[in-house]
Amino acid sequence: MQSKLLQRVPLRRILRWAIFVAVICLIPVIFGGNQYHMYVATLTCVYIITIMGLNLTVGYTGQISLGHAAFMGIGAYTVALLTLNGYSFWLAIPLGAIFTFVTGLLLGLPSLRVKHHYLALVTLGFGTVVYLILANEYEITGGFSGLPGIGRPSFFGLDLSSDIAFYFLVAGFLIVLTVVMLWILNSRWGRAFKAIRENDMRAEMVGVSLLTYKLLAFAIGAAYAGIAGGLLAPLMKFVDPTSFPAHESFWFLIMLIIGGSGRFEGAFIGAIVVMLLPEFLRGTQQLFFVIFSAITLLLLIFWPAGLAGLSDIFFRKILKRDPPQLTK
Amino acid sequence: MFIQLTVSGIAIGAIYALVAIGFTLLWQASRTVNFAQGDFITVSAVFMYMLMCMGVPLIWALLATVVLSAVMLGYIVKRGIIQPLMDRSHTTVIVATIALSFLASNSIGVFWSSQCKAFPRVFGMTPIRLGSIVLSRQHVWTIAISIILILAINLFIQKTKPGKAMQAVAQNRDAAKVLGINISSVTTMVFVINAILVAFVAMLIAPVYMLRYDMGATLGLKAFYAATIGGFNQIRGALLGGFLVGLIETFSSAYLSTEYREFFVLAVLIAVILIRKEGLLGTEER
Image 1 (tube, rainbow over the protein chains, first blue to last red):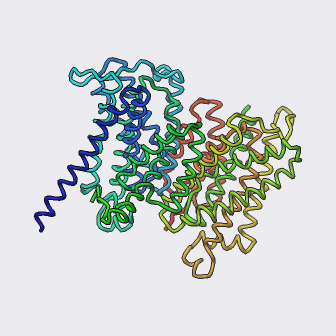
Image 2 (cartoon, chains in turn blue, purple):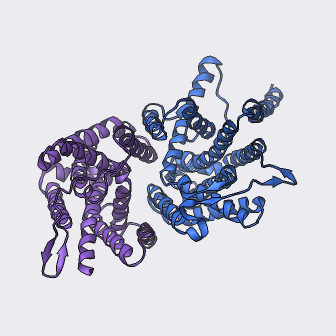
Image 3 (cartoon, rainbow over the protein chains, first blue to last red):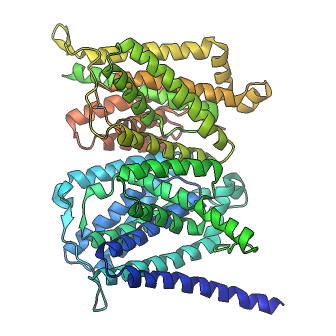
């Protein structure tokens, strides 16, 4: 009986990964013919990476970051400036990740020492300052005219400049970062993060260093946004400050709440729904801001688990079994 | 030049101080932060603008805005949105106010206008001359009205029964609860007071800024900085912080750099948090 149980668990996990990879591979088969569809699909993957990082900070550790758009901007400009000056993409993207990670540490250190809402305040101000620097230091960043002509990378001689090939590159990053995130969440760190969210005083009592783990969660979340930004630059082949305004971070938070904050699938569901729904329903971006922020308020009041919580109902009521646990 | 800059710094600082007092009162009553406060100012300003466009005189437009703001942005927001989230985590309430801020500003953009509109110069254009010093009428009125409002709030807190209940909650929540003070209704009262303040601030700020759907966002952020710099749990902290932020902003943009004035305020904020985490006049919280 016990051995049977042990055999079942890995099979299910393999199946889940197989479905995940299959969906990623099927998208270019279905939409490959249309350049715009591939662009939206790639963009969605980029946003999933950002929201996954935000989920670590907000959903798993209970800190509010309103600077994720700025971190994305830092990552994007790092990759843009380095590749335009002849350095390899494969050098630029880890540098962008390290740079955003360190920025996260420096920003988190003063604000996480104090009350829980200070991080939100400082990151919001940071977002404004990054936007100002990108817009005003035009000798380096090109100001509002931005930096055009960012090339797409190649992978050991394999040219990734076509839309489909570049999609696979971004999807590859998504898979690797998903594995890393699951590994983090199932490690000692992950348990410490969740302990802080549930009750930080109790977590401190059992010996979790609050400042260290809050900082780590915030800085890793920032690095995810940095990598996403680094992928965004070659996707659009162009960066400018208006792609990273401070209010974009509000939008990320809304994506996360709609998907399900603190649920692993939340980042995926939130990014996909919020990115794709406006593609089907025509309307101005601002109208969708209104609709989605209203939905967010309703979800917070009546259904805090977000859309990811709906899958629980599906499993319990229709399949009559417990929903799968992606993290311990 | 120096005197003019000081007066204009104090005038904008007085506005930050008024909004910062709102943050302080709310923090003392309920340990929450309303990130939508700035956008509430925009909502009030738009409503007042619409009334004035219909030819309603300023004083009546202001009164109607005060009433509407108190009911909609004070009572209904507290009862309908904040109340159900109160017993969940701090994070949830803050995220809700962030969503509310996004909803308020973008609704104005979609349903009213996303263009800039010039709010009428309600205080007149002709400057006041005192010898060689030329003062803007707008600044003088702003400072005068702010002083009256700040005195009124202080009087309310110190002399009336509901004001004393607010003080009791601020000093010791548990003891206040034991003594029969309903913390939830004190919080509702603070929301209504803030909403009234917001209506006045809208009248003071709208002629200076252009009326636009995202007008309030920066204002709210600056006031939030002010409350944090001065000390989040002290009204006099909010006052000091407000004037400091106003002066830093005015002088740094005049003498150092206009583009980076946001940066100087943020730098001061981070320095204050690092040196004295309660803020300049704040006290340690249990």
